[in-house]
Image 1 (cartoon, helix red, strand yellow):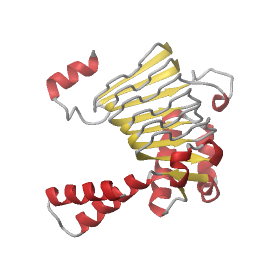
Image 2 (cartoon, rainbow, N blue to C red):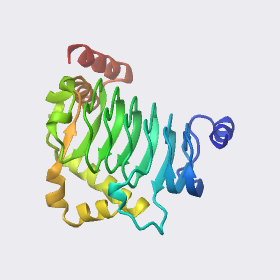
Image 3 (cartoon, rainbow, N blue to C red):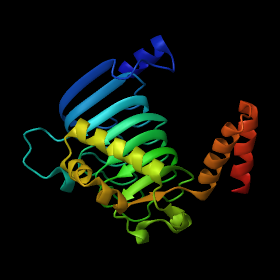
Length: 246
C-alpha cells in the first residue's frame, strides 16, 4: 500500500534513496517489501516468511536477527523461499540463510544472502546475487542473465546448462563485490561479512562468478558500442546481434 501511494504520486522514478525509512521488529509474513519502489527502505529485525522483496522495484529491504538473539545467524534461516522473485531493481540484504529458489526470475536487483537452498538464481535474467555461504543443488538452472558471486562454490551444485559459465573474478568484479560486502556488514552487522573484509585479499579469491555466456556477450557488445560512440539505436542492435550469436 505504501509503495502504491509513492508510485501513484511520484511515478516510476520514485523518490531519492531512503526518503522513507521504516524499522520493524518481529516476524513478518509473506511478501515483506513486495513491489517496493525507489525511495522506500524497510528494515526488519527478526525474521520473515517467503517472497521477501517480491517484485522489488528500486526500494531497499534489510532483514537481520533481533539484536538480542543469542544464535549464530549464519547457521540460521532469516527468510523463507523464493526471495526477490521477479525483482526489477533495488537492494536486499539478508543476515542469515534463505530457502529455495533464491532470486528466481530476478531481473535487476542486488541481493545478498548468507546461504541458499536448492535452485538458487533459477531463471534469473538480470541483476546480481551474492551468496556468502553454502548453496543447494541445481544452482543457476535456466539462468539467462545477471551475475552471481558465490563463496566456496561447489561446482557439482551448478546446473549443467550453466556449468561452463563459472569463471574467476576480474578486478572490476572484486571492487564491486568488496563494496557490496562492506555495505552488507554496515546494514546488518554481519560477522560473516566482517570476517571476509578483515582479510579481503584472501577472502575474495574464494569467490566464483557465474555469468551466462550469451549475457556476457551482450554486455561486451554494449560496452564496445558505447566506447565507439554509437547511437542508442545502434547500441541496441549490437546487443541483439550478440544475443543471437552468443
